[in-house]
Length: 236
Image 1: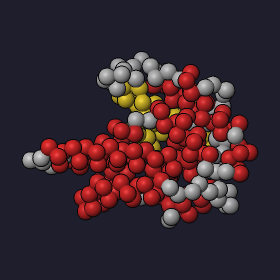
Image 2: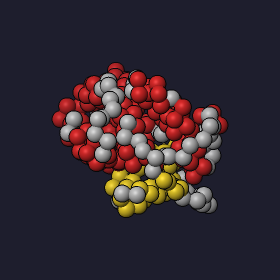
Image 3: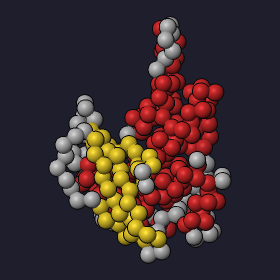
Image 4: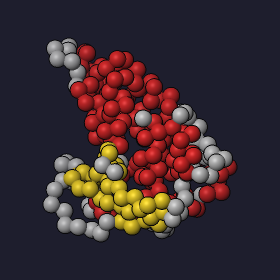
């Protein structure tokens, strides 16, 4: 399952491959199509500017993901979807138990966010200059849209993926929450991976597991073949 997650992640990051000199504060969350494209430009512009420093200290990739990409991903909503029934306190819980559970969920969400940051940062080491074509802006009729991206690679068939982006009912802003490739949802994959662990060990134990995983150091692999890297990383 980890290998599947990494494969989805590399699709996510390599699909965001247009370069510009924009700043993070310039990105508006009013239009999901424009947002995805502009976040792509900002993220990889910074990657290009700091490439030399990143080679010397790969941990800087975590900063790029945290500062440029994560503000546009609703990790709380994604966490909620992963937790499922574990999100709510047990029926009949006391006030103290409910408060403790609420704190437990908050800690899980933060751990899940850091886990995503580390996972995406590691995938940044696999980045290559693929050609990308974004879905043209369309008329928005619902609070959830799929923003399509075609990844054009000389050595592989074109890959079409879709970003699931939702509009927050309170803030009215759009944020990405899932990635679907070849009909398979990244969020669903992570939910299936953690479901049995949550049922067996509980939220707190999974939180500790995610914290440990998020502390992994970012390293550049010597093998330059993307598929080989994915295979190797999937076994770690």
